[in-house]
Image 1 (cartoon, one colour):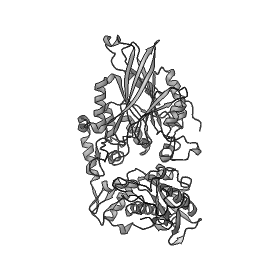
Image 2 (cartoon, rainbow, N blue to C red):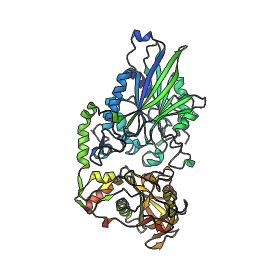
Image 3 (cartoon, rainbow, N blue to C red):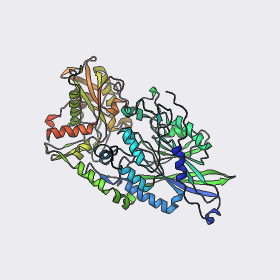
Image 4 (cartoon, helix red, strand yellow):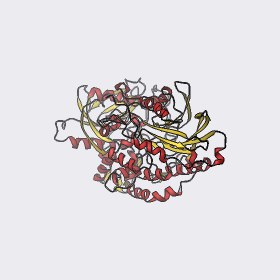
Length: 598
């Protein structure tokens, strides 16, 4: 639909006045008419309060020595404020805050903040304590539904921004589009800093069940083009965009449908005049500083701090006052590493109870003894039982759901992805944390009606994940370094490579893309193009995530809002013992000209 032009939300305008700080001293006022200030930025915190791996039940550590958590970010923020003066700093975030760890899941589903008299979300507590000035919406903010999101918003002491999150009924932003902050300079004229929040349009695909018909997400470029001139008209001297959208210009979905580009931050900078800096999020990559020319040749500075609270971006602004008007003279971006500081004691003090509650929860035993140890270390190139477990749970759940319907007689198959390279189910008591580490996303289950021809096309698309490797060429796999020379073709992530259960097939990586699936069979017979299947898929895939063919457009037979992770925990709990004989099946193999690679 064509949305109405946006109107300023009074709440956002009022928030600007509340952000004003005490005026500078007379001595400061006599200085040269220049002003320096710093905008600090985080992104993709994903529920990481502490440097703790709930799946491993120990402090997080990686080979690069990174640390995680907003508790360490808090220490960095304090140091910057002490060095530059708090009145000369702002702190913003570019989204994906309330999903991603068992801590975040616990306060969305187990002890939900949206319940009557529910708790305050740990991320709200920590961000309020640190003193954020504004945050943008990320796509994962919508994963638990709008009630949870609105409750989280109500718990924040700063605005949650979404200029391109539009209420379908009114055509206006459903969240404050921007936040205006007045910086006291001591030069007789304040600096007005506008922070505009934008979110990737992929929400309308990935969380369709929650937002369809309620919210729409126009492109970042179109909404920036609308709002930036208006912010300038309102007197903004500096415009900073907090964008939950990467820099690649690419999308994990088909933009031919009219949906805006997923990773559009560079496009915004190139197409819209008047922007000074963009805090980038969503892509989970580290970009210290990227300079892009806008239509007028003005340089826009972009920076993307690493996710999970591992980095803090600093935008250092230098302004000069000329003829009564502030002009941005320079912008420089840099990044601080959270592994150089300790966790803030105050954050630890106020959230230790919540942390300990979740540690207790994830250590609950759901199966008394696993028969053998199962891992995902080789699951991206070998048919591993640990991924078959995901598929089996999905098959059983959908089969039960469709019992008694007209589709009950159709064979059920399932997709599953090797999300993690480090997940492990021990040959011992199996706990919630073990199963949560296997399925790290909060996806839900959908049943789609697919034909044999469509399933073949789906598998061919998935097989693009492998690098074309001729027979006889060396295959290098270094599981310790998590690298190899046959997977992740063209940067395709592991979560966009799928197994499909219930079928047998070969993936011939010596063949070119589009002709790799060989000996595709169902129950020993060649798969017929017109054969019908019920395919169990996660909601990300069902709604177009990864741009797999046919599945998004296929008829939906059933769906639910219960997370697949929860279904796995229920299934294993009911069994009481984890035995691969109950779920494992040798169904596919990687080959080169018919000879297995491994």
